[in-house]
Image (cartoon, rainbow, N blue to C red; front, side):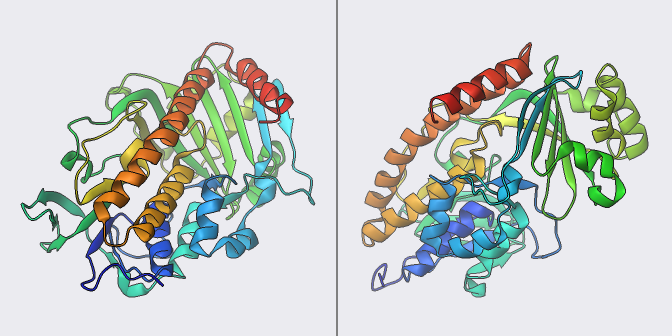
Length: 389
């Protein structure tokens, strides 16, 4: 075991998502204690996002280092790698099915379940719920003062922003802010699809369905709890959510207006909107500039979306967050008495691999919402397979 120093350094992780939890668990495995400050109240029944594909070379490596890989394998859905690609007419360009005995390298797991796997191995006293960070202040001593909305003020040696795209830690390091990527996604949920809508269950199959055309998309993603999460995606102006006139909190009326936006799409594809059972949640997609770097700071660093938020169209978000967590944790383990050196090692390496993934993600977003997108994406994916990528 590694001790951080005779006087234990105070390490704060802001955000208890997969990245923050992976970081805390790896450090815990090496005898280094941290405190996670999570803004939400702890509620195991709380829905925490959709299904994630965990990549062999990044996310799975981090899970191995965290000591939860076997548990992950028991819960992962390898059949979730099934993928269908269509255009708006319903023409199928790709129809990939995973054999029942075949294990690919990007299995799916629901985000909430992934968080629970990590939480189950953590010391419960190392995570504080209901701590929403309001601001950070750098002190002359090199420490950082954390001000939370609940009135608590903490002073720490190292603060790690794992608090996503709208990070409250990032402004300590840079004036550069996230930018709207030009894409708005409307999230819908179709519950218990196999029982309630067997026609759509058969059409969607066990993984993801992408229908792309006219700078729009319908994406269906089967989750482990039997629901299909649907993302109706539109290249629109940043203020479209406020100006489009769709009452997102009134599901029936909102669905009718949304169906009108996809009026010339195949009827079976429109079932992804018709069958949705609850309110539509609009989300703007944001990015940081490709190759983004910040001013190095003695006791502050970032991981995941706080460091390099990118579009979801390369499937890298959670994988990068967990890989960052592993890289930073191991840098701290290698330099237990030199936090500055650990941060420097981690950031130099992270800038390199994350900018490469951010570039891929930007390219993929543009391709998916271009003219003739289904055909172009099929060509790109077939080319990858032929080259063994």
